[in-house]
Picture (cartoon, rainbow, N blue to C red):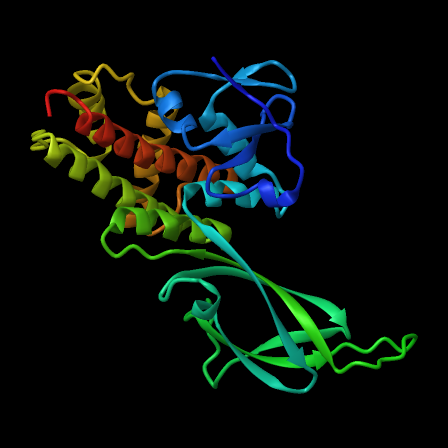
Length: 308
């Protein structure tokens, strides 16, 4: 049994590279998460919520947090999945233009920018407005923005300063060109945030198909006459079982099969399955993520096995 505490002193500690927190589906209280929760979950261990003392598992914690409507809380799973966030500050004068290059603030070149938040920190209130050329990008491209400082005037206050210090939060996905499976999974979360469900489904399936077939190739598993949606069954039987590892959670396996069905409907009919909802998308992308992590876990386990 994993006993995870949830005690934090500052918001800064809620999301970092070592641990975060997830919401208990029973009491909605925070349950501390760390990276070693994945191997424990795949090993069959449950999590005891320190708030309500009920058992749950990592998948349900992840999914419940993703479903939460709060802007801050529902971003936590994407950080666990691999997104990162950078914080920095710059000064902008009113009625002037400034260029911001994200790489100057530690964001790797060619990262996929997911979300930017600009918050004026005073002394004057100047809102940075992004400038574009004749072609208006529907989705963000590139790691450079040009900003124009627009003063927001409050007639009740006397404005004495002509600049603002702008606090910036940038959520981004580091691009790893050597791992298309991981990159496709990151794209899937991006499409979920944009409510682009067909693109989310296709990217999720690409990630899983690459991960499953790469793992099977490493273990010399014959996939002739095996449907893509049935590969996970072969992985459970011919890779996990010999390693003495429990098969992937049946609820996740079932949802991955439904994800593949959603993909087939798009590929063959050009439409989503009737009744497909955001909740369906959240469950399918969560299952895809856990399927991806399960492949990583099996490969690492095999590399440490005395027989390899």
